[in-house]
Length: 208
Image 1 (cartoon, rainbow, N blue to C red):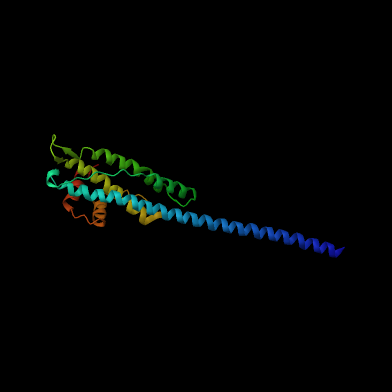
Image 2: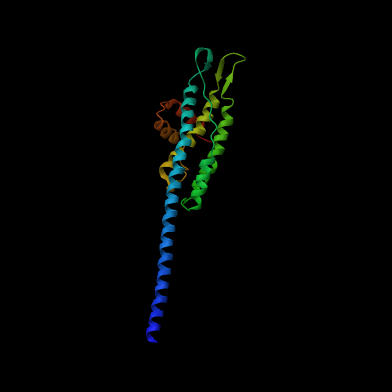
């Protein structure tokens, strides 16, 4: 009788321990898979951010160059730039999926992601009147005021894209950065040499 009791006890104990170890192993595997998924999502998000910012930076370079001109003559081989339509769906979806994993620690990420498309649309609308055709000719005038407005928005976007990509989970808005600070970093990163333009826009926007 005692032997039967002992056998039953160890059988039950073994089953309990086995179930516990199985549950523990499953829990560890689940944590590992969640970690691997969040890591992949994080990598994809910042890679997409870099991809999106590359479109913006190429347009910034073009607008800065065009700002130095008085007119564009298509008959002389000149050309002018226009912003590209950017689909932010992938960027937004990656952010939302990463947010579900609680990998995004601050509200600054959410503010940045939500504002990016709005800022791009605002810049897009400003660009419509930046290049104006003269009558029916092949000559286009450059509206430098509009150029400066577009550059102002692009510098802000690219400055915070740079912070977003480099700081990742520690990203925060730098409320104390003025246009000059942001432009110096952005112009240096994309090898744009135009200190005079930075000074002009800085002076005009100093009290905004």
